[in-house]
Amino acid sequence: MKKNDNGFTLDVLQRPRFVQADLCTGCGRCQAECSVRLTTLVNGQKIKHGAIHKPLLAPKAVPSAYVIDKNGMAPCRVECPLGINVQGFISLLANDKTERAAELIAEAAPLGGILGRVCRHPCEANCSRGKLDTPVSIRALHRYAADAATAIPGWRSATQEAIREGRIAIIGSGPAGLTAAWELKRRGYSPVVFESHSVVGGMLATGIPRFRLPREVREKEIEAIRSLGIDIRAGITVGRDITFTYLRERGFKAFFLAIGALRNNRLNIPGEELDGVVDCMSLLLTLNLKVDTFVGANVVIIGDGNSAIDSARAVIRWNKAAVKILSWTVPEELTAAEEEVEEAIMEGVTIEYQAMPVEILGEGGRVTGVRCRKTELTNEIMPNGRHRPRPIPETDFVIEADHVVVAIG
Image 1 (cartoon, rainbow, N blue to C red):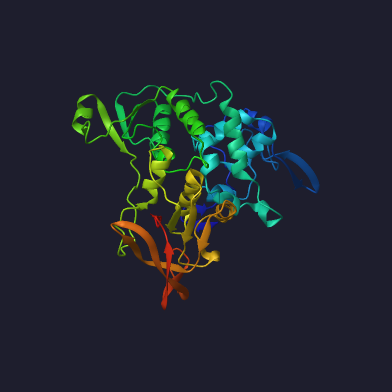
Image 2 (image 1 turned 135 degrees about the vertical axis):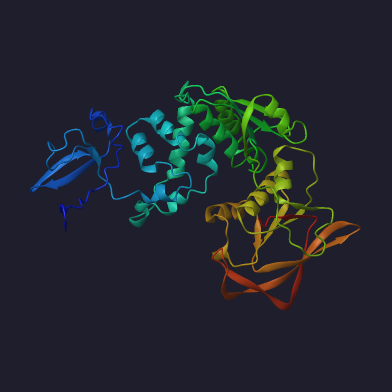
């Protein structure tokens, strides 16, 4: 309270309601539907109520006001890049409301069945339950909700706003393109998705191994997007087959570029141009589309991230080759998900730690091996949080290989 020339100015401290006051009618339906039960001490008495309720103190003062009791936003939701309402859909599942749980997921991620399989689940690493024993299996529950809802006819038929004029062209049918198409359709627009490959899905179809994302799951999710009336055209490269001018002349008013970041980093070492040296994206594209290719008996994969692990496990499934991963660092500092590293090792992949490639060897223009140098870690911390490795002089050794896959990002 502050005194001024006109009297006093009073600052009122209010707790956040977490309810959109301008939309709340005070009907009480939310309170009846809420499945989360809490106990609050009021005037010495324990009062049981839902997480959403009218104020327990002086409820008659603001009769139509509803509030949600919570301490900020759940850490699992904070860590989710898409902001999925994790605690919300899990609570709905617990109360046998599978379709509503899937709808809640779809509000942020329409490709729920795909995400429930390929997500790196940072939510689980920050799950409050993990402080007590083990984190909730959020990704598995997400996958269950999406898969179960898929069997319910018409569950994905989202409410659509009034139809708006003007067509929108989306260039690329990967996760970003399909999600944009879904959202635009909900808002009343008429999106058309253009894909340069013969298969729809972008990186979902060409960059993720089938053991992580089965083709039938991907196709079912994409077909569900199509069923909303979204036009998806494959085998058309915008800029080569058709131009932006061509599209504007046919009524397209806006363009969304969802072409991804497909350029791979190079090692910049001698021998990288030899036949038999490929980048991980080219390898996964070839294997996913089942294009005839030769993958030899000894495959060396350079890199220790998730792309390297995906490549290694995909190659082993392709022809049971001997696969070795080269990592600059120690096991504790691998960037790949720990569970996937363990699974790769169980499947037969070997990892050569603290080994830096310095030259790719070849004969007659064809790769024959990789010359490596042992490394040691310095005290310098790189931007990714890992210690910078340093090559140790006079520690070179050679690993035989008839295929080398570069997977360094």
